[in-house]
Length: 196
Image 1: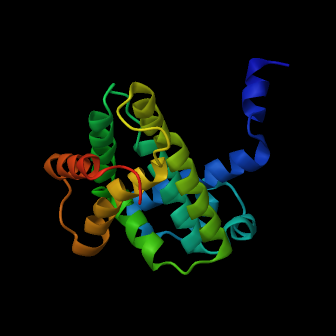
Image 2: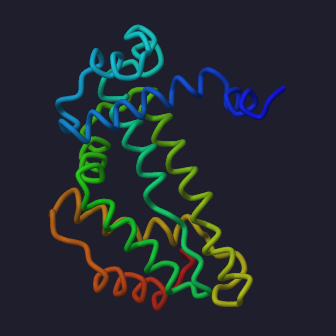
């Protein structure tokens, strides 16, 4: 079996179809904006039949949100600076920059406005579980270095850090910047990191 054949089979047909549809959706959103994306166009771009798209995502809105979530996972890397403070600032800076992009804004607004169907709930749960699993390494490293106590709750720290950034992007529409992210991290670290 050739290396090329193995690469083609990785993830299976279902994963390839999903990726083709998400790529096509992201491209269409970049060109026309999320509100103008239609399933017929995505079917044409991806080479996947409309009925298959509806069977998997149910609605256009769920498809758009899944594409936005997939894109955001690629755009917010997990830093490793050797310092918890700098890791959290770099992570928050990446998130703030992402939330200031058309895709980031669309994700924040779509996630808050969409009806909570099963497909959307599963996409959101998968996204946040994945993000917390990846991001908790910053907290685990800090515990190993002695910067945080054993038993620190990584999800709590991350929720407290990112909530104000989403609040600004979604509700007040005020800009996020490095000055803000540094202040948030310092407030978080000074206030303590474990919930009562």
